Image (cartoon, rainbow, N blue to C red; front, side, top):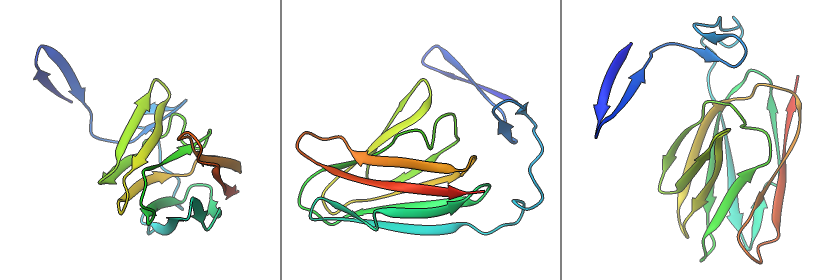
Length: 144
């Protein structure tokens, strides 16, 4: 455990694995240890997500890459997929977080964003762009 003081705010950093329900130091399933990331690229073009359906597996570590090939700003908003999930965000987008964790990321024209996370539960999870007038959506399907 390490404590850092940032402008009067003390931040505690812990190195290890955290899991909702199990807490810090939770065991990692053997099938996940050493498993390579799966990379999935979603292109944003002509106000569409291509592909509009992404298939994943529970426990799979995913690199979900969004490439905005349009001339306008777009957003990636996952409805419930990433609630209380550790998400690493990189690229030239602007991620936004709320009390439940990752909320959305804005992706500039010509921009690219990469989200790294481990899918936790099976189901069908819609995603969309929530900018005014943008009727864009897709689905992430996580199989058990």
